[in-house]
Amino acid sequence: MAQILVLFYSRTGHVASLAEAVAEGVEQAGCEAKLRAVPSLTPSHSEPVGGSFENEDGYLFATKDDLRTCDGLALGSPARFGTMAAPLKGFLETTSDLWLSGAMIDKPACVFASASSLHGGHEAVLQSMMTPLLHHGMVIMGCPYSDPGLAATEGGGTPYGPTHLDAQTLRPHEHDMAVRLGERLAKWSRYD
Ligand SMILES: Cc1cc2nc3c(=O)[nH]c(=O)nc-3n(C[C@H](O)[C@H](O)[C@H](O)COP(=O)(O)O)c2cc1C
Image 1 (cartoon, rainbow, N blue to C red):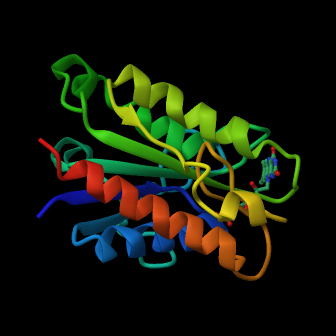
Image 2: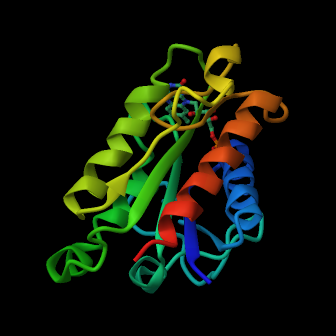
């Protein structure tokens, strides 16, 4: 069974909700979803919070082996001044060995994000996550315009990937777009 890594950073739970919806879609498509988080940075912004294997919400922290062994990757981040969050970027910057060995080449990937303002950079954040994945040789997919969420959106949801505009819970179309992209990623991850 193909295994999809749903890798994210989330400080206040919004990205985690989208990650759960992507995982739902992956499993609906008959693949295994492996949800993994990356740790926050300490106030000094230098070292990961040490000694723990999971974040406050119980998500296990990712290892590079999770990346090496996955058949597909969904990567999620909150907006941070229009770009991906530093903890996620920091984790990606530990992956030079995977880049050198070409371990991620041809694996399908998608990205998702959460932001607190409508025009605060949803697409910019998604594109910031795509760049390192392209360097790794991954095959990136977004949300096609056949997805009804793109026409319905009054919150998040872009052709570059699903997003959430901060609220208590995901809006129905935000949830459904994430599920459908999880299904799509799973479908392409089954091809050798
Ligand atoms: C330092 C910082 C920078 C942020 N920059 C942006 C931004 O550029 N655009 C935006 O819409 N929201 C921005 N936000 C808000 C978060 O991206 C937003 O609340 C997100 O949904 C949080 O996700 P989480 O609950 O998974 O941590 C920022 C938040 C922080 C703390």
